[in-house]
Each structure stands twice: as structure tokens, then as C-alpha cells.
Image (tube, rainbow, N blue to C red; front, top):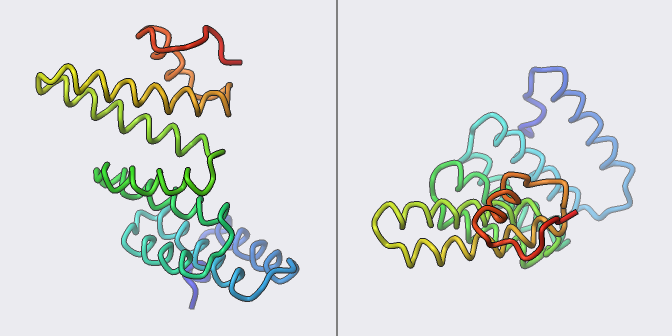
Length: 173
């Protein structure tokens, strides 16, 4: 039984019914539909904090999904799981793969920047100012890219870029 058929709340059941109807009506191939079911089940497991289960579903979805845009979102969600578990290096791998497939994914660019900023702070705390500044510069590069795509988002990042002198322009929007 697919995971989403086990959901008890009204919203999850409604989403599942709607998603199933859309899947039946869309002119997609069987493999794409199956990939979407695994992706949907991965999102459900992830929302419940069942990260190992979610990763299993996402990995299965990746074996079936051929669309690069859809693959990028699967990889992005896998990055979210690793980041939330504190495995920042693994999260970066998945975020970078997602951006490679879909360069117009500002949320992945933002998350990459957040991790580089975090690593920069850690390096500075450990007394390695040069490494910290280099990581901050990397964070700035990714934030600028994300802000250019979504100028009304990432206000804190915009303020950080301005206060640290890393912004290339005063106003992004």
C-alpha cells in the first residue's frame, strides 16, 4: 500500500485523492507516474520526520524519473533531509546536483549559501579567519544568484550582503 494511502488527516487524504486524479488524467507514461508516486510518498514521509523512509522513496523516484526539472526537486528534498540531520557536506552535494539540473532553483542556491555561511562562522570561531572569509564569499555568490531570481525573498541575506560590503548593487528588486 502506498504510504499516502495510510494518512489519517483530511488534508493529506484530500491531497492524495487530487494527486491521484491528476495522475490518471495527465498524458504521462507509466514510469513518470510511478516516479511521482514515490516522490509523493517521500514528501509524506519527510513531513512526518521519517527521513530514512523518505530517502528510500526519493532514491526510487530518481531511478524512474527522467525529467531533469522533476529530478532537481527530488535532489533538493534529499538535500533538505541531510541538512536537517546536520550532514552539511552531503546536503551540499544534493543541492549542487539539483542546481546543475535546474539552475533556476533559488531555494537550493539559498540553502547552499546558508551552509557556506554556517561553515564560515565555524571557521572563524576556530580562529581561521581566511577560511571563514572565503566561505563567506562563496555564500555571497550563491545568495546574489538566488536574490536575482527571487528579488523579494531572502531579505536577511540581502541585509547581510549590504552590511558586509559583499553586495554588488544596492537594491536587488
